[in-house]
Image (cartoon, rainbow, N blue to C red):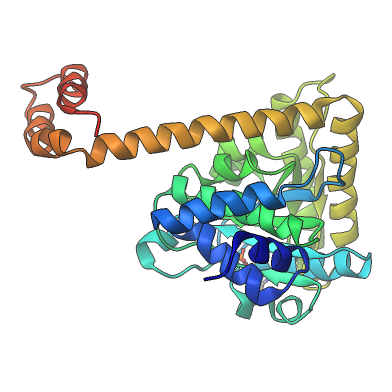
Length: 327
Ligand code: GDP
């Protein structure tokens, strides 16, 4: 059995086999693994004055070019001297059992670069469970010296909000959409995005992409009025050609320094830690309620009552809580 100290040492030395083992441990739901993982996280958490990694979220519909962008961006960052970790939050993988995000075969040149580490989404558990594993993996990657962490997600359910809450800068990739097509973009994602990029601005699509970027920029102005601390820029880029990738990264860095100068950066990170704490309390309590013998014994009957209208949801909730025996 490997000890926590040995694991911590291996993680800090960026020994990939140990790192992989440590990540498997934070992803595991076995109580003994969980206990070990928490000790390990305490052990490797850096002191408050240590340099901190740059955490960036990347979202967009399937096919928009997330993995192509991550590959181009990752290689660009490595050429600047960074070490890059790519993680993914893919709640659909918990059903399909396979993760489409963070797939190494889609990021071929980055995957073989020793200064990169690509980890697909954990494939078991709820979004809450996946998010917890990803946050904890992020801590491990940072302890191993990765100073940029890219977290990829598709906009399924709450996954965008979840990822936005674990990164410093949340970016949204889109295609050239104008006029009515703009309506097709989830409004919520525009509210979360700190940097927006219209991808596939190449070949015959360059002009179209620029027009789309201008329209999106106007739409964003309504969400972030003049005088806001940060107004998200809308850029154009081509991930396959590599154009606009350096500008994309510059925008991420500008967002970071704007928040830092306003004191907002530290406040956000601290708040994220507090929010994360309560998220885990909520998930744990809910799990206990759902698993309790009392609740399991009344669940079917109460749900049927709500469906046939003999119980209001409020009364049903009360019945469930009354049935919860605290175990
Ligand atoms: P993801 O599902 O968002 O990760 O998208 P992918 O990165 O897998 O890209 C989907 C498809 O779009 C692939 O065939 C890519 O080669 C293509 N693609 C990605 N970025 C660009 C781009 O900038 N320009 C063009 N023309 N095609 C791109």
